Length: 456
Image 1 (cartoon, rainbow, N blue to C red):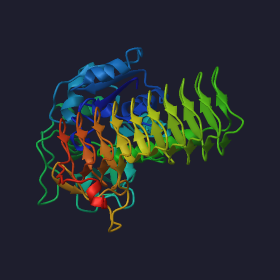
Image 2: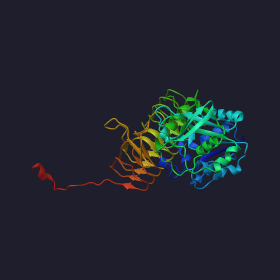
Image 3: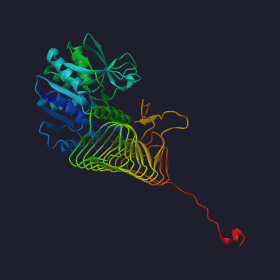
Image 4: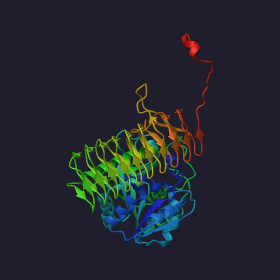
């Protein structure tokens, strides 16, 4: 097998506000686009030709891979689902087999290699993950296994399903089923309401129904499907811990340095011309890019990743598993717990927990709530449906090209759209859409005053 296809044509509406100015698969996780992890897994498995099937904003993907001759972008246009997306690409694929992965999932390299080994031995094969504890099957297209084979596939079931899909290794005999997908997921439990969408898994179900056999193997390492905003934080934590855990010694690029006064518990990897200055405290391991300065009492309370050309200093605080993008500033007693993408400025006594999109500026003393008065978890609404995140429910989610004024307060779980502004002194307790400004109204009372009030 020489060809791999990465499905990346979805609109990403459930992950708002982060797929408005970029394709969903270009959302950064640990400072790299999600899709890059699938590309790397394919390359590690020996795939020589990688096709990314994309739609809206596909130029962002093409630009990222402009210097990689092994990766090409196939613009499918809007499709009805993953089956139609793959079907439009299959004409350029060899019938002896194709590796198919989701562009919004992160799967371990070893698991992808195991899938290809199973394919070489058994033919058509899938890589599946046992549903994590507390994860509801109603959120996924699920399956069951029997004797090493895919036994059944069911869409968003109430119960009884055991696994969800991670990757596919398919031969030419399945290709006609992909091209002739019914356009609706008919394998659902009674009372369920599937959308008019062409799911690749439905094509596999038809293939099995007609007597085909599909081998299955389970993942042995962590993998994650990134579908909603809090999944970005979950994926970031998983990848960041793995990357920092690989460090076994300090690695300093050309021209980089670590001041002797710095207190570092783990190991550090610094890019070119980067510097860790005086009185910095790092209670874990750190990966930093080129031309980045961390100085003057900055505190990092665990493992962290910082991009290129960024500044971290003046007694600011990064919590464990925080990621800072390129060209960012975290300054003067600012506190960050989460992710800030490229070109984000955090200044002066502000505190943030969650995700901030690129090119966003938070005004001085902007804070977000992290603990509700009832000690509960925020219930989110995604496309009108109530969602109960297992983690990061009380994080705040700010889109790209947004701003806040001084002393803005963002309550737990609130989302701010792209190109939007939260004005000075606003207490924001509900989501605001893209291209919106919210300002506080202030009533004032004026009376005469002067020395006579003091008995003069």
